[in-house]
Image (cartoon, rainbow, N blue to C red; front, top):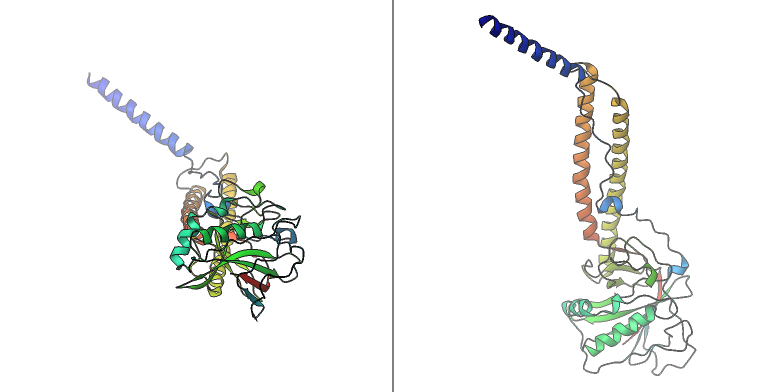
Length: 339
């Protein structure tokens, strides 16, 4: 019995030793699988370099020449103010149906918050931009009439752009606490609308937008001699042009950070591919230089992956704070405001 016990002990010891040797010989360093670029907003957001074409400018057709019903108001720095007259513009490419503004004598100037509440409730921005039949002038006409009917004093605005035969129409409101506010509620062409308005697209005729827009309501920044800029209503901080300039700086900073991130992610994926190629089919023995190198390289790749994941979340948050990026429409040369 005693001899049997000794024999069993020797047998188990040998089995344990053989198992340990087998482990040491066959152990492999962990090899990370090549990671695709994170699928959050920063990597799917396009590099923001849209190239506008003349066809992307919303169309505003002059109507057949007719004398204005009321004499034009005074001109100041290429900005003309008209009181109580109909704009001499057509709504469609045919040129027969003219802009018809329906005023409300009891309408009053809103506060900024009252204007925001009205615009959020108004559904004009949800309509499709249809080339030739429902374009920027029609959007501005409908928003004007809806505002006046709701007791909110509004203006229909025509903006001429340098070097362009076609201008753009939008609206203006004289808020009691923040002054004159330009609003553009026009959207994209019907064929380019998606479940998330304007997701990663530029339309051939309507407004170009890239990023995710929850609404086509926008604060417009109109100043003669400067770019006609647009910022989504839920992002715009104020109606003054300086706020648009601040927004453009924030957008440029995001674009730069996004470009850096995409480059780092590309470098990471290339290094993962190189690591996997190096370890493919190899057996590493613990304690050797190759095994140590594999462990260290794998650990470094894991740290880089975690860094990129955190950066992706940060950029995703930053991108959402910028809202959708609406394509500027050109340099403003003249502005006509019809109250």
